[in-house]
Length: 301
Image (cartoon, rainbow, N blue to C red; front, side, top):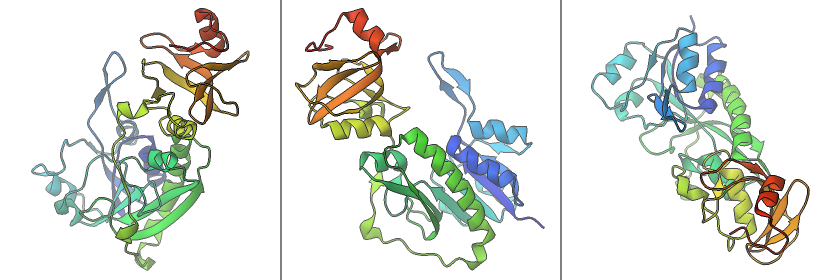
């Protein structure tokens, strides 16, 4: 008889894990995800990708605003799950649910580093070359439960988009491995003294200044692609760029090529391939330079 699993998750990272569970020997009896939300300029009400997939597979979907609401515990208990698997769900599980069965979180860092909502972005911002996924037995604290299994990956020079994709596949495999070997695993307690935390990413986190160190600017670019991206004080978004090898005055155009232009930051420069002024459409570097008739030595604002 297959083991019953309730899955809780919301974004693409979670979808990859859910697909692996559905295609495995385990029975996904219900999915919990965040409520539908408005997306884009037109604020179109859009369901989470996890919901769309689950409905296609005829799996019951629930979208409670708060897991502490009356009746949620009984609703979950009625499915008689052997495990609850959590991956980037977006809500903290209360004790009433943690007490139902084994609750396992697939956290996108090697704990106890980067507990919290944005472990991938934080790892990039901190200049980490290695990251990974931890399968963790959930407790009432923030990502501080006993560790069940790990998988490590190289994230050097990668954007958060790329790391999310890599870690989603890693987490899917780790979830299955953990469930298949659950009874033989000896959990390891986290060493809290080595822990670090990260909060939710805010739009304002993407602000960069010409006086910022170029290493930090480049790390922000990778960490905050695709959202919130990085932008200058006048609201101009830098959509595609890389750290350059030349240096010069802050905020000045130092070099112009056919497909890029380079601007000075503290300690170095940024070679920009695509840019978008506030309230305007994205432009390739050459279109932007030609449209504003800029030359080496000019400032963009």
